[in-house]
Image (cartoon, rainbow, N blue to C red; front, side):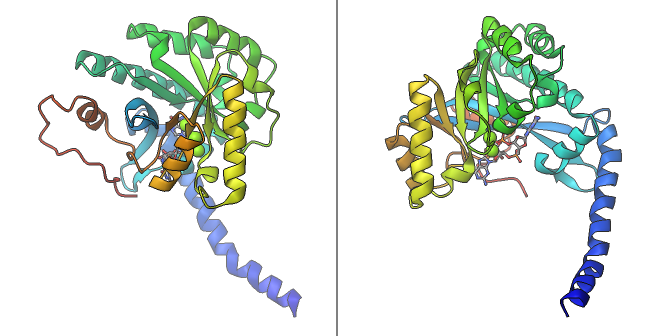
Length: 292
Ligand code: C2E
Ligand code: MG
Ligand code: MG
Ligand code: MG
């Protein structure tokens, strides 16, 4: 009967749930030590101007080099870090490491492109957030224009009453904000008018269906129209095919990121990509993904 089946199903899944919980608890313990043990590392994914194909920016993406598991992706450890209250310290590390990298690129003569950093709601809404960002910039003598802060649409939902004041301060300092993963947050669109918000990133889930899926095409066009009339710059995420590129270019999207142009790369690979005339380092530039 259905009842026995249910019971059997439950019993069948129990050990798997336990294994999952055990893995999360293990990750939690190790995550607490990851910062001190220097196990975090940044990779950078280019963002290209669709019209010209020129790289105009890179986005810093966090990687955890786990001593036994190898590379752990943010999708697995960021939620754990959030629930443990570790995300703010991790975000601060990312900001400082990114600024150190921008300074190193400057010293190596790399063109001054924009560098985006992902910021969690936890850090953004902390009273010391703006101070932390400006201190990271100042410590490397960097201009605020070099930086773009990315905050997801769903994180915007969790922000408090101070959001507008924080955005106004960022705007005064000349620091732009991008609304990341746009279209997935089920939220009001009022934050698109907030000061400092200058970029909108169309989530990969809409780009995947282009150009064939009529719904994705209609939603993408509507987002582009709205974005344009608000004076925002649009960046499409997760472009993997020529056909997606063509559609977005024709629909007026300004920038794009995705495996079609480049996987996330190591800092020295970004340098070789942006300075092709500089002598190549021993390791050949690799545009294929590291092991997943
Ligand atoms: P995101 O900010 O939306 O970043 C884009 C994600 O999509 C990255 O995954 C990138 O590697 C992946 N991606 C880029 N192009 C393509 C493509 O063409 N196809 C596919 N299938 N995927 C593509 P990643 O690095 O695993 O990061 C996942 C998410 O974790 C990020 O989404 C961001 O929300 C979060 N994250 C990453 N680094 C940080 C960080 O330093 N701090 C915080 N708070 N969150 C971070
Ligand atoms: Mg992002
Ligand atoms: Mg995104
Ligand atoms: Mg995304």
